[in-house]
Image 1 (cartoon, rainbow, N blue to C red):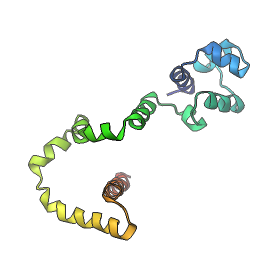
Image 2: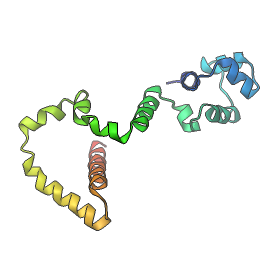
Image 3: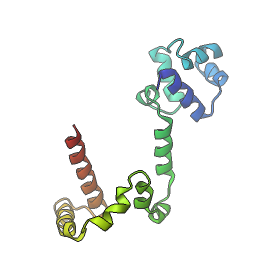
Image 4: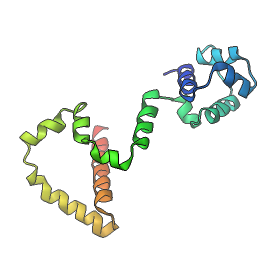
Length: 150
């Protein structure tokens, strides 16, 4: 996504008009338009002011991804009670069908003992509770996967 497109989406997400942004920054509406159309670029000082105005970091502003922001907001705004009601496997299976399919193909009991041992080790050595130990184990698995991908 271009910087102009990022600026446009960040402004829209903030609910501000070009006129309102221009007024707050002390520039013309045409300047805001030129930035959003990639005809010109804001200087670093103006970019920092835009990031503050749009409530994003400068890095996020440069690489603003509307979908990612919406996902992050959705996750943060879901209550603990609602999260417990969601069948996350079913949700993720829409993107990764293997999550529904593997249970008919894999004897999960074979893995259960090894995973229980790892969870117990995280709990006793690090003092983690059940949920935290599970999350750490999941993250370790993701790190192993990411290293393998490189």
